[in-house]
Amino acid sequence: MVIKDNLAAKEGLDIQIVKFNDWLQLNTALIDAEIDTNYFQHRPFMNNAAKELNLNLVMLNPGFLNPLGIYSNG
Image (cartoon, rainbow, N blue to C red; front, side, top):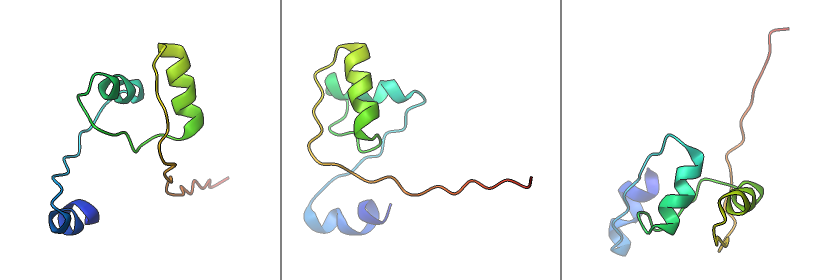
C-alpha cells in the first residue's frame, strides 16, 4: 500500500488493487483485460497456468515474493 498511497499519485498513476479467491482467475482476468497486470505469481506457476489453460502469457519483469517463515513446536 505504500506505493499506492504515497508514490502513485505523485506519478499520476491510479492504482486499484483487485482481490481474487482463485489463483487461476488472475490469469484469465489478465487475458480478458479485466486487469492490467498480475504481480502475484512466480514464473513456474505462470508457465504452468498458461500451459494448462492454453493462455498466451509472457513475464515482462520478474517480481519478488516476500519470505515466509513457518515454524513448528515439535
